[in-house]
Image: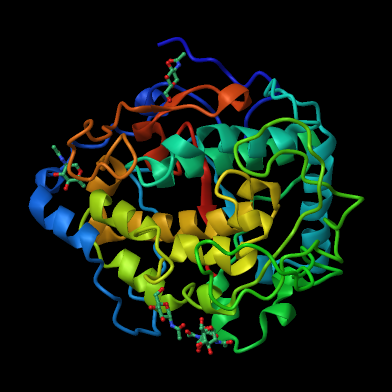
Length: 392
Ligand SMILES: *[C@@H]1O[C@H](CO)[C@@H](O)[C@H](O)[C@H]1NC(C)=O
Ligand SMILES: *[C@@H]1O[C@H](CO)[C@@H](O)[C@H](O)[C@H]1NC(C)=O
Ligand SMILES: *[C@@H]1O[C@H](CO)[C@@H](O)[C@H](O)[C@H]1NC(C)=O
Ligand SMILES: *[C@@H]1O[C@H](CO)[C@@H](O)[C@H](O)[C@H]1NC(C)=O
Ligand SMILES: *[C@@H]1O[C@H](CO)[C@@H](O)[C@H](O)[C@H]1NC(C)=O
């Protein structure tokens, strides 16, 4: 297949090189998927319909892994993604400066409302929202989206670091009010909650506490505006970044929730648990970061436009870190580098409407980068991707 290489990024790709074959630079091709791929659909369906509540567990179920040779490409010298809490103030300000720079970088998506490359990411997520959630490729699509964002910060904006992650479970366990979490700091973080505002709450988000414009920090209006949305619209509609904290939903982002996602034998189960079901009576760690911050009226709570809040990328980096940590466990290797499953069509867990994704399934992120296969995305120290994580 002829790849469409990054149209916007012409310099050498240190952090992210694209290639159509994983083995091209010496990383051994992973072995074929294990028999777990054909686990009973009936069990899976039953579990999906009735999610098992996680047992309370405070300690991480899995240790911090060291990605072992020979699965790593020797040409990949990974950049290291760190916890936001572990960055120095100067590293934090460099990251935020790069995000502001990306907001002004030349747009490549062709979407009418996008006024800079940051908006391209929001718009492309918006356009693809109906195809990338509650599907087998959810976590891998977002892994790619994030890696291309990280690469754009580095190549377009001279950012020297890696994409940080927001380990909300650490903040949650700190016992501090959300207003006092380092990530929401008005000077060194992303600014805080919006002031309380009445508004429609069709999904009954519990304990919503904001809803108005983020009043402080680097992404307050008018210096920063969300240019696309709400909903499916991708026309130009500048409005403020809004947040609507729900302490209850944010509380799902704890070690118990992560352990429950980790306690799975194969990709299909893992992928199912990381999203769980779209219902605010059942916990899920993906929804926690979105609706704990975005509630009913905030940008992070808008399924289409959540990447309009720069915190989106740190939330998804933590989900990717959870996936990464699970993948590199010795007991999950090597099949965690070649096993994918789950529906192509959203919620089609019984495969009545379409098939499952396979390793050759392609994901695309519009004009931001070329298509890659799910196999390309499974290994974070390969030729398509080249990064690792430092412990929180
Ligand atoms: C959250 O809302 C529920 C009702 O939706 C209420 O019972 C509970 O006390 C609230 N918790 C907090 C911390 O405000
Ligand atoms: C997480 O947040 C919830 C909600 O405020 C709180 O009850 C809980 O103690 C926190 N910590 C952990 C480890 O769950
Ligand atoms: C911790 O998270 C789990 C699952 O995400 C949830 O069931 C539980 O209620 C949370 N604990 C607290 C104290 O909020
Ligand atoms: C589709 O993926 C699910 C989740 O891994 C799995 O349980 C099911 O058996 C797969 N279906 C087929 C036809 O392989
Ligand atoms: C890229 O992937 C999408 C599916 O996500 C597919 O529809 C499209 O045809 C692919 N494009 C190329 C050039 O292969």
